[in-house]
Image (cartoon, rainbow, N blue to C red; front, top):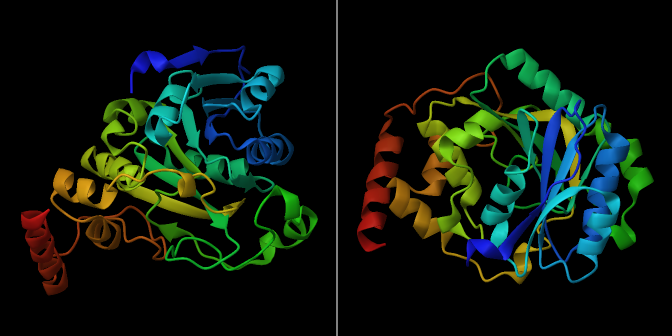
Length: 296
């Protein structure tokens, strides 16, 4: 991909914006509209909304331009790494909020995230909202199964708005899932998302590993900040990169080891994380990863 395929279209931005909300979208206009509608309707604060449009031939480009949002555009699908990086280059807030276009944010989602980072008092953090999903997956960090629809056409919005607060779920370790809030200086420090993971599989744990290497130990999922996720509507259309192998070769440990022993993904949040304990199980896992690396 040539970088000159991406064009940039900045627009006036709200000077009181708390977050710069970055949204990549690939010919997904009904979901994009619903996502942005939820941000405008359900936020406590004003935010700067910035979109990267992959292709945009479904009317997305015309719609975004008409709404007056800042956006970047590529003639084809360049993947989420280039998309988020391009959108971030147009941001003005101190805080970047990364979110997929198949999310519907719920009331006060932003208030709970902002209150969290105010308590932290420094920029060495990665803080996620908590997703509600219609079906159970491998992800221990979501509230599921709670089915309120598979897309905009059958989305049961009013029912969701009446029930989303009733689901008991604790704050959790291992923030890396979107919606993801980071400080723009930390984004710049680690260089954003790594484009060698294009179109994007395993780019999020790689991003968090770069944060870990930079000294971040505060990886929190905030239960009170909730969104409804229709689940990976764009991922199904891409030719996936072998992110699992790329992560292993880049960091010399597997993603599963990083998630379990470093981020403690999905366990109850107790505060800043520490280095993994050198338990027999951890040492065996590292040996297994070394053997995997030999055959990668």
